[in-house]
Amino acid sequence: MAAQDLSRRGVVAGLVLVVTAPALATTLPPDAEAEQKRLIGDAIPQDGGVILRLPETAENGAQVPVTVGVEAAQTVERHVTAIHLIATRNPTPGIATLRFTPASGRAQATTRIRLAEGQTVVALAVWNDGTVRRATATVQVAVGGCIT
Image (cartoon, rainbow, N blue to C red; front, side, top):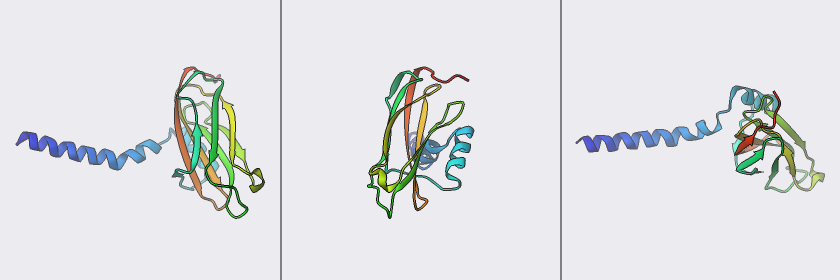
């Protein structure tokens, strides 16, 4: 009977993890959460539709390459107006805001960013209708690139 109880506990624990995992994955440190609110207000970002590429490991946090963009085409009717990048553990979490118009052709950019330590980077794509889409990527940093 004890083995059966253990199985029930395991199933319940697994269900709790499945239900709460999305919330845990999107919880931001207080400074990063405040920055997100400053950038997008009360909009609730939805996952997907945003491309965010970072190396899994960066030797030097002062020069971490990043590519960010959206999968959809830019049209006059529906287009991305901005993509914001937030580094969740940097002293100043807001690291870039990229502006786009339908004339941009594609809402995509490649640049380098500074990261203080290994952390999650969040990309928030804001559409002209107020929709916000999100992507996240985690990068490990050997030597931090921010001066505090």
